[in-house]
Length: 108
Image 1 (cartoon, helix red, strand yellow):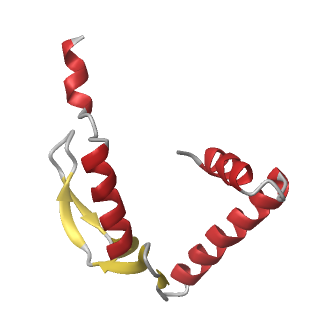
Image 2: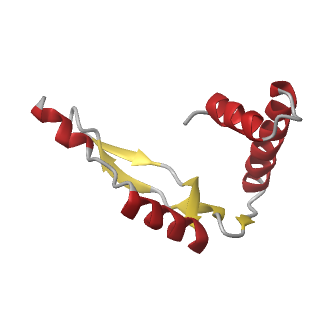
């Protein structure tokens, strides 16, 4: 699902809001999460999960094409930990509707 599909689904669920209003709300939520992470704080949405920032130390890597060593600088990356309720709902849904592995499509 992409952002526009999310907005469309939410407008269908909450018809009192226009597409434009829902776009503003979704953008505001995502912008707030992004700003909070950029400030080094974490965002916890109970039942859904926790967004945080993890620091990755500088390291040596290899260019896969040339094999030459490359210095990778220290950087911060966003990190997400799934909440208990979300994990339980996904697992309950999977037992009812199992996910078909994309590798199984090779038989066609």
